[in-house]
Each structure stands twice: as C-alpha cells, then as structure tokens.
Length: 424
Ligand code: LLP
Image 1 (cartoon, rainbow, N blue to C red):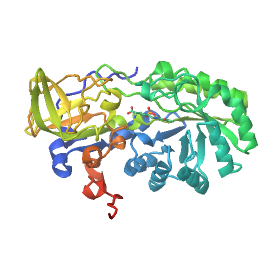
Image 2: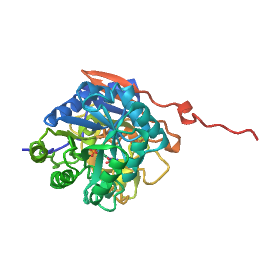
Image 3: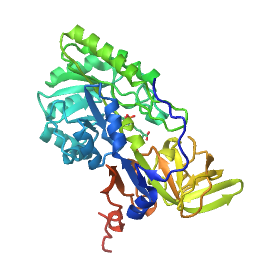
Image 4: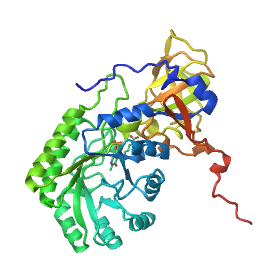
C-alpha cells in the first residue's frame, strides 16, 4: 500500500536530529537545510529501475549531486551550466549508463560547444535538435523526447504534454524525425516521455502505452526507454505517495513487451527531480513582525519569494512549522497569513493559485521565533533570486548528524558582481 501522510507537525525543534536553534546560531536565517538521509531513502525507493537519472534542475548544488553520484544515480542536464555542475560533481559523461544526458528543446551556443567537446549524449526535444546534433557530432547516437499528445502536472505551468506544451517532439512527427536522423547520420537509440511535474499515477500510467506505440514505429534500434520524472510527493495532510510497485510494474511490462518484440534487452530509466529531494529540504526563517490587518494576522519573515518562489508562481502549498526560541509543547493555534519582507503584495507563502491570500492554522508565535517552510528541497533554492537586493540564502547539508555548509550566504559583492558604472 502506498504511504499516506496523515499529518505534518506544526511544531518542530529539530531537523535531522539537530536543534533548529543550533542551526540558526551557526548559519543564520534564512537558510536552506537538507537531510541527506531522506535523499538516500528516496533513492532506495526507486532501486527497481535500472537507471535513476536525477533531474538536477530540482536542486543542483554540487554537494547534492556528488552524494547522488555516490549512490549510483546519474544526471540529466538542461543547459551548459547544468552540464558543468555535473562535471564539477564528478559525473563521467561516458560511463554506462551515460553519467550526463543533455535534455532540452533547443541547443544554445554554449550548449553546442560543450556537447561537441564532451561528446555528450543528447535527448532531443525538437526535430531541429536532431539536425543540429548531427552537424555537431556526426555519427552520434541520440534519444528522442516525445510529447505523447497529453500531459498533466500539479499546475498548468508544470504540464509538459499536449499541444499547449512547447516540450518534446510531437508524437505524430516521429517518422519525419527518423528521416532527419538518417540524413544527419544520427542513430536513435532511445525514447523518453515526461508529461509533467507533480502529476499522479492515473496520468503516469498512460505514458508506458504511449511510449510503446512510438517505440514500435522507431524499431529495433531502441535500447533505452525513460519514464521521465513527475512523481509527486505529499505536501499536505492526506496526500499519498504513488504506489511505486504498481508504477514499476506498468513500465516493466512495457519494457518486456518491447524486449520480446525487438529480441534484445532494454534499459528502463526514471528521471525524477522532486521525488528525490523535496522532502529533504527545509527553509528556516525568522519571524520579524507580527501584525494585524483587519481580520488577518500576519507573520512576516526574513525570507520571501526571492528565497522560495513556488507559492507565488503556482499557489503551491508548503507545510509550515514553528520552532519557538524557548521550546514549547502545548501552544494554542491561530489562523495566520505568512509573508516575507519583499516590497510586493504577492510575497505571501500562504496563497492559493491566482494570488488569493489564505490563512493557515499555526502555533502562536512572536518576533524572534523561527518558522520553517517544509518539503522545500525541490525547486526551492534553485529558483531563488536577488530581487529587492536580497542575498541568496546559504545551503546546509546534514549528514550523519553533522551540518555542513554547502553554499555560503551571498554578500553584497555577489549582488553587484559584473555591474559597472560607465564614466560620463
Ligand atoms: N525530466 C524533465 C524533462 C523535466 O522537464 C522535469 C521537470 C523532470 C524530469 C523532473 O520532474 P519532477 O520529477 O521534478 O516532477 N518548478 C516547478 C517544477 C518544474 C519542473 C520542470 N521539469 C515546481 O516548483 O513545481
């Protein structure tokens, strides 16, 4: 039976066994903290798949990449910058399976250079990429990212399938792509489908069948199939994990049918981002003001949407807990709105899609207490910005009871790096 999260505690004194007060003392606020043990557990959950390819866009700190590499995970990169991160973390693009795969819908100039120099494996998300890859690396093998004509995500903005999505090669264009591949001396060795982020088993289970259809069109050159990412994690009470045994069985059956059709082994990949890191991450902030606006009581923090953009972008819900300065166990709850320091009304962590402010029942707290935005490891720090002249927060990895800084807090010099005032 897939596990359901019945409740998230609204009071928290420790993260991965370390008192929040100690973390704050050592690293200040706001700070991102990741629990390495959770990442390791999530990797183990997916062990049935032949290859776990981490979509590093979810959290790309090189320390996280390094730890995943040591656990046998390989990576996906969507830009030259992500390729360089993977190289910096020790991934070998030519290992078997490929340590790094470049997946995108376009190849920009810097990506072209690194694909050519490092002979990267490319997962083509547009017919033009096939031609471009053939020119860059004649004789290369490639995989095709197919848009199966349907998609699903936790938000319309994270749905990557169907005619409204810019992602992938349209499923009816496969034969044309094979012609292009022949013309440019590119061998198509695999297929990949990613229908969206934060989707569900109902939608995910339709993908295997769609991929099988395309694989039969492509034929015996196929040696790898990728189920893409999209596995959801519970962010709210009552939400359930996907039944991974069932999910694997669907894909394993697809793979086995193709193996018997083609007469050779087929490697089954999965490409999660969120699933591996979301629950490992916490954003610790300090309450800096408590104020009333009509009927609404606001907790205002020293972290804003420059630190965690998911609520303002998608109306995303993150569990919230309070760590009181003086630990408390029995505290009354009140309905509050949680916001940040930015000079923009949308800087609210408790909002619904469309920007509607929502209230959350949280423990009574005061200025100086800490508030923790939880399940923040995926698409948290990586989407942070310097808006309003704010420094990006540090990142801390807790491993074997030891918190280690894996990225320092930015300073003013980071903020103006590269800027200059031309002489008049
Ligand atoms: N593979 C491809 C080709 C992708 O585009 C993505 C996510 C993934 C894998 C990983 O998907 P996941 O397993 O994490 O669902 N910023 C949004 C999510 C954007 C996802 C973009 N692509 C959010 O905060 O929810």
